[in-house]
Length: 229
Image 1: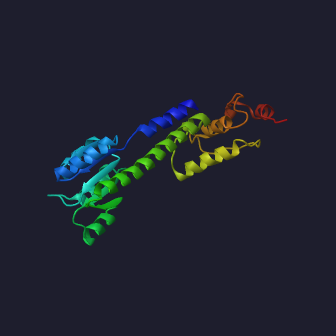
Image 2: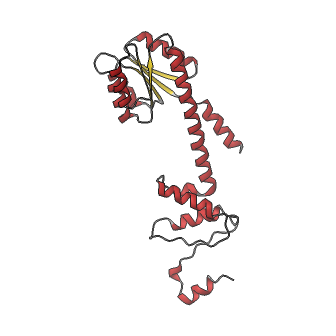
Image 3: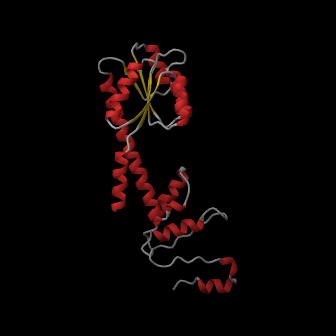
């Protein structure tokens, strides 16, 4: 339990990594100073090309980009980020808001659209704070899920599909029961792993888990060995 609490405190100290992209150096400096003071790691780029190089070499939790820049613009960077860094939260800022740019940004999947005015810094700080909270809870939830699977034996079963999640749920449902469980499936599909996970989550977890190769027993002997009294 103490290890779990320590790990959660560690995730709380982790701050999102931010990339600021704007051809106005003063904006980059302002946002870099603002977020560094709050404990964030911050990188800046003055063009889409420079931002692309950083995205290819580092992982960023948040990207803050101006829309209008010489050459490729913020919408182009947004589309690029969706390919290179699909997990990044993307904020577009603009000093010349138009319906066209807003529609283009929304259609490209922007997470937040912010106007460059006297409230720019405050709006971005609120947005970054919201993202930070979401990331913190996701990291904590992920850690707790990994711990649960490690402690229950489910970490040995690999899979994230809806069918695998249904199997995990079924294991946790049947394990506490006293009923016998029949597990079927083709060779190599992980029947023994499922059986072991059920055992490790049952009231018999402290008892030995014994595997038997049924094919090695004559039919009459197998019947007597597995007879339940």
